[in-house]
Amino acid sequence: MKRIRHFLLPLLCTTLVASTLSAQNTIYYEMEEYTPTIYMIAVGETLQEYDPEASKQQVIDDFMETRRCGFQQAHNPQFIFSTRNNRFALGIGGIVTLRTSYDFNGAMGNIDFVPYDIPMSRGYANRQRVMMDASTSRLFLKAIINSRMLGRVHIYTDMDFRGGDEFSYLPRLRSAYVEVGGFTIGRDVTTFCDLAAAPETIDFQGPNAYNFAFNEMIRYEYSFLRNHLTVGVAAEMPQVSATYGEHFSPIYQRVPDGIAYIQYAWGENRSSHIRASGVIRDMYLHDNVNGKNTTQLGWGAQFSGHIDLGRWVDLYMNGVYGRGITPYIQDLAGAPYDFAYNPSNPERMQTMPMWGWQAAAQINIIPGKMWLAGGYSEVRLEKHNGYLSDNQYHKGDYIFGNAFCNLSPNFTIAVEYLHGSREDMGGSKSSANRVSLMARYNF
Image (cartoon, rainbow, N blue to C red; front, side):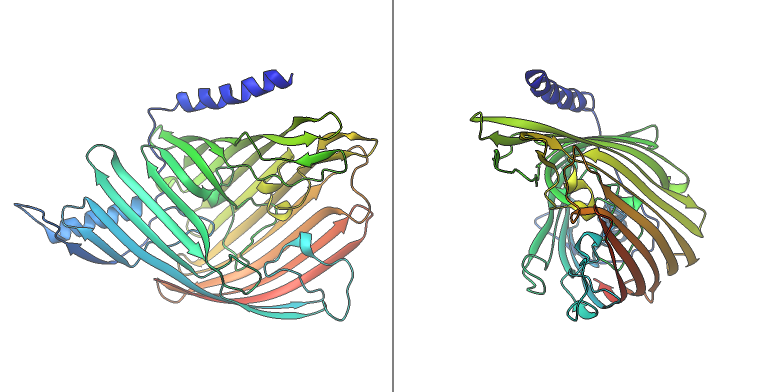
């Protein structure tokens, strides 16, 4: 069976990629006012006719049509340098963000609001906490190349300042990718994440059942039926976190995670959609008893979407279930539960079952300028063959309510309340609360 599985996984990925070789890249549209400062530069061009306004509008169209909308996605830059023939354009932008928060009736042991990290016992040190954080401020570069041979080439890279310990403000690479001909190559948000399926939150982590994470990847996407239907497939760098015990040891991973999705969109500007996603993982480890390498098969399935109920209400949701997929569930990312030894037979490994869901609604008081949002999210890690002791994580809840106001196209203020709880396998419970304020400026 193992040899068959090792043969079928590459064959499946190859078949999926081959079936979409004629595809184009998915384009994400957004209707908004966008008036950047554009500097047109001549670089040895010989133009018989040059229309400055038409050239600038083409640059704006290029940037609008390649902008991704959704969770933690940056606005288009305010400053763009472009050649007069629109062969090359470079945008420079960023986000300055200050979050101020107050934890009470249980202080979170994390700069973000992560139910997994709620302390199970309270003392004088973790009853309350005040924080101010600017580490999520961001710088980015975005380039558009209109190539005669390759068509439109989109290059994007950004960084924030969360590369070290809490409040160390070391630079951290978030994204660095090239999009061309339907392919995305580099580091980007995982293909398993539906960017439009979660509302905006002040909390940088977001709902605990969501799956916003960055991976190195090769991805291919194709839209057809007038952009109503989109399919995608990707090979992504695996991140494995497990409990090995005495009889097994970690080794370097050898097979990328395989991810695929299909999405149907409808409505004006395709503003509503539903998506089904799947991930399959072949995770390597070393069997110390038998002196050979072995693998554990992880898998996950997700249903997600965003429904636009006119100008005034937006609905968001995602539900995920799988075994051994901790990197793809926000609350469990980094926890050692991709697989673990079987307590009744420590010489055997097992992948751990886990699931989560979140649902939220946004009420647009003044569409595009002021809105209220709220939602609930839940994650569960289940026992398997008796593994997981009474003091280990079983369930995390995440409840939020917030209000955002765009005082100008670039300046946003917001307020948010968060309540989270953690329950362990033995039934012990604990909770935490947070009130946050945010000021953000995009440039």
